[in-house]
Image 1: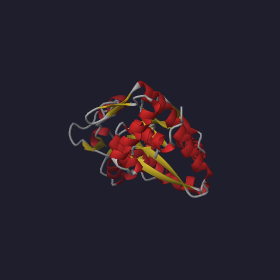
Image 2 (image 1 turned 45 degrees about the horizontal axis):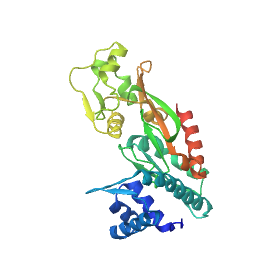
Image 3 (image 1 turned 45 degrees about the vertical axis):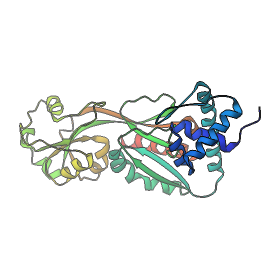
Image 4 (image 1 turned 135 degrees about the vertical axis):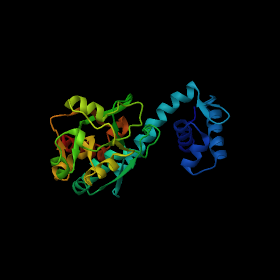
Length: 292
């Protein structure tokens, strides 16, 4: 069998990953017609059908699935090898949830880049899970809570707890929870357990106010309200740890903590072997251990 052209295999790999000739064309900067032609030529050369064409999408056949498993590894290894050989500035792309990026990761990234001046870090934030096998731009993700990590390399980072915090003067003014304005994050994910003031009050054997509960969509908004002295906030100890250490926030009843969820770094097997990823994972694990 004559070996197929590298360009045809590259087009096939993109279409297999993205499940769409149109999406593959956009990624490669060519027309959908060119993609379709390359794949048809490849199928004719192999005497095999690689895709089942549907109305708005394509699906891999059994033969296509086998070939995609090989091309995915091969092109990732080629990409990683070329990147490691390059002496130009290297970009590390990290995907994570907005709160962790803004409140924990961003304040620490300067230290990583000072230790690794040849690496620039780009942080992408989203509450949706990025598919690391399909989106090769992303080197690793930091995920919150449990999840299906099948096929990925994982590294536990930190497990949070939840507590009550407020501006120091506000905390000192309180004698009981019922005197406080209570602020929390509006929990929208049905896949994760919610942490509520009712849970905290039960653990503390205190009675909270029946009215005056305030909620925000983002943790950053909750923290800003706490810093402004507007009330007590129910917040992850990990996310407010730096502000507590700086004296900007103080715990109320620090003996009362609710068990929280874990943060885990995940990457593909191919990316795990890349030098910049190894260096970042080693650094972030040390930082996470120090902040617990």
